[in-house]
Image 1 (cartoon, rainbow, N blue to C red):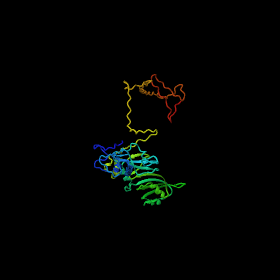
Image 2 (tube, rainbow, N blue to C red; image 1 turned 60 degrees about the horizontal axis):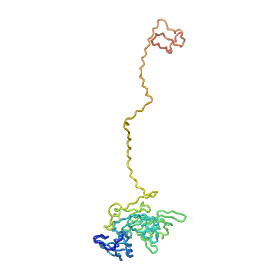
Image 3 (cartoon, rainbow, N blue to C red; image 1 turned 120 degrees about the vertical axis):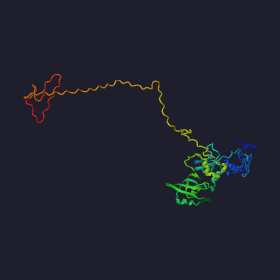
Image 4 (cartoon, helix red, strand yellow; image 1 turned 45 degrees about the vertical axis):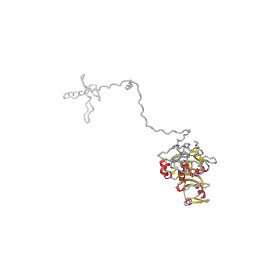
Length: 384
């Protein structure tokens, strides 16, 4: 949108509400154009105009209804302050435009994000947490040494040292005429090798000058070969992946930085406006969000035709045999003992040899008499 260099009508709104009267540098910083120093440089280059007239001083105060343009484009109205956490990878420059044509941090950001400025910088070979915001005044307050925002770094260096030498940085150090403030360094791990020792050191400082960590450790004879920023003030890198960006919630911004933001520029609500897109799958397509797991539905009953309600009787090849009625056996009649003649003994029947029982005469239809059993012990055997 290119601004018409004519003053708007009284009923057309401008970027400055009635009764504000802020300086143009402050308004543009709040709008996310850049820090106040960046705005002053833009004004000196003649790229900022108010109602179509280029400005020559950043001390110009805006009146209600004024239209401010940068490079011919109308500056949008200031939106509430927003803060983002970005995991900067190695190989990106922390600037909007690089004279050497190298890739920048802002070129790698998603296109749907507003115009952002960085809180501090990380050099080309550094990685880790980089804070981004659309509020230039907040960025300047977080960068200022008076804010005492502690920066924590994880450093891998090559050389030899001990904790006693690192403790010399606590009161501060001067390197090549530049005085650095107090630095807390802790030796975490040292691994000896053929060409020296590889060290891991945790560094905490609150000043953040240009290449401060590298220059200070170089003065101790250590060559930094990897530098990772872990935290900036109360915000930490956490599990944020390399190249990922995440917006800090409005409630957290109010609680942590509410005293550094103008009351009319404080964010509202509890949820961030920007949500991270789903990661790409192996095929390059966005992976869909996992569907909620629903409770398993009971299996549907099988539909039967009419007449299938009654179960069929299975045919048997042979019917089971009928049980026979139990017949009780008739009781046996006891044989009556025969009368023995007096004065005589019974002899064996004719034709009966020794050891063969004799048959007693019986009438037809009567029960035969029992066979005599073996002789009792101590008894007399019958005579022949």
